[in-house]
Length: 165
Length: 193
Image (cartoon, rainbow over all chains, first blue to last red; front, side, top):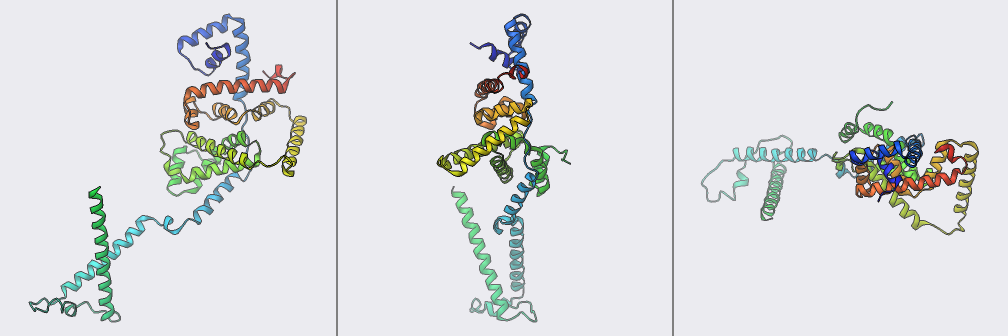
């Protein structure tokens, strides 16, 4: 069973059903005990509503933002770099590899020579760059092909794993 | 001058990389967060540390704020957990009563109390004094209810308890506060209540 104070606090907080509220309203108007207690709690409630908040030091916001800025600045590079940038760089390299491989294959003189495979690299006629040709360019293309195969392998393995799950 | 944007708009701007939007959010809620922290820590220095920690934690996990509740409800739940952790840590760190620092702190508090008694006997002073004497949970519920613009359901969300429990706790907290106020005021109580 609720005591008078509990009933009156519920009434002041706007809780309870319409019937309960009407009943308390009636009691406040007609019962001296309720009336007296209601006045007391109403006054106390007003005091609580007018309670003042404490004020933090002047530099509070500045200190918070400074800590955040310091934290942001000391974040590891890996976490700070946008994923889109990494993907953009990867796309650039993949497109470069594909273009170079395409050019190399387009310049190759295909023949039915039985030693065709062994002579394949020798038969490659790559576009000539004055300062970047010969073994260096071939090495670069070879490295690109290995990198492309490595990425393809990684992608296929990932796909296989996700299919198995 | 503080921004007129809503909390949600400021959060969106912060997430888009605008740090000054977060500074506006801090400015908007700093008084309340600081007051809540003070209800737990009882000293301004510790309250400042806890309140700052709350805003930094909120910034770090702003991405996880889904917007399902009010930002303030979410923020106050951070204040509650941070303050509770602080109190637990402080209890563990409690040193001997012979500790010189403790003695100085108590002495300073008494001096400050006496000065305040002499200089400031306003109604809000007595009320704040009584609130300070409450248990942190009681003080927090009263502050959230009266100054945080939080419903019983939102307070329940922030504290991780049932709304009915909040109702009971609020009722008891108000009773205890009234008793403390009456005890503190003695003769002045009739004037205040």
